[in-house]
Image (cartoon, rainbow over the protein chains, first blue to last red):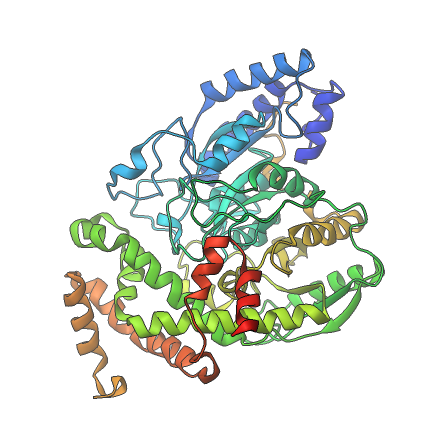
Length: 468
Length: 78
């Protein structure tokens, strides 16, 4: 192989143009994992043998003219809160729960497998998709490929870091309050939180049942479109699964029609938790969208503080409800920060929880009004760069994160890389839209990425990590 | 007695006891230190008076149909 493709869609094109085989793609990814994973802590479990068998089979099928679509023969990593047939699901936890020891595919894993994707392994997450890294646990400690002294973000930590480091071309993550968008921002990749219910979440360890979504991370918006085409759609096994029809195409033919109205919320771009270079980078990104034909107007997200508070109360209460029995029986098996975070859910009353749901509903009505004036809203994903692992202060991290709002409302939002800080670390923005209009967001991200190359930049540590 | 008059630590201990949890000392200290933030969150949501008359359960109807838009439509009817 002359060079390793940077994006999932380039890798898929190369397979059909016989520039490389599925086995060669897998080998390139495996070499990178061999070289880098001690430092980055992406994998919890690698499925090298199974992946190699699947890649050989993909090559045989493609050679015989059996083409399962864009993901056929493409290496993909899966967050270790999602069930797969190859291994138990740990959720990065020492807590014993027989439910998650079953080795069978969640709907989303089964769909990827049927589409010919090569599942390379289970990748790291924060314990039960919550909190910040815990050094006391015997699991991979996820670090950022742009600077391994820093965190890759969470909770889809290995998904973001693995895509950025080229260990796979796409990844499955999950997002309850920002867990796809935050690592995507810190690691400089594209990550989509779909509309609630769009991608099935059966076979996925819950955090907040009324908030949890499963979604893709990859380098480009085109890659995200390819992954959504396979991952999304109704599944009987998931009680929250949507029946909404899929779009005609996940990547619109006219991605950002001239005159598309984009609202920009700048209200979190000042204050102590904003990186000094972010405003300039953010403004340049907005200018790119304007050059591409968008009509930009300033907006303010309605009931921002209220919906954010309601979202935190919701996931905290729902997560506590799910883990209550285990907390009582296996307190010491939980990491320190996770057990305290979960136990704090016991403080909220039923009235607090119910009022939080009412606030979410009111927020949805207000956001619906906003979306009569604009087609999408751009705001920072996080206002800081990836924090250093040593002395990581979770309060500081949470203060710089602006993702809970869209989780509480269930609307889709996509993180797009928009540039780098002087330290060489990525910045991102989230573009949010109406329920089930992910394709609009992917289209805007695609148009942005045809005019910029931030999403194609590779961390320096990848140099020499493959022989190709 | 209104909630605000109950000492935070008493509320925490009551909640933990009701939950059947007996946290270690360090965890309890972290929980106690976090109470002001949790109180702040509940004050914010209960301060949204116009939400009180809404039916919060519609969020779950939305979840069941997978459509936040369905909740919005239902909201418009009520």
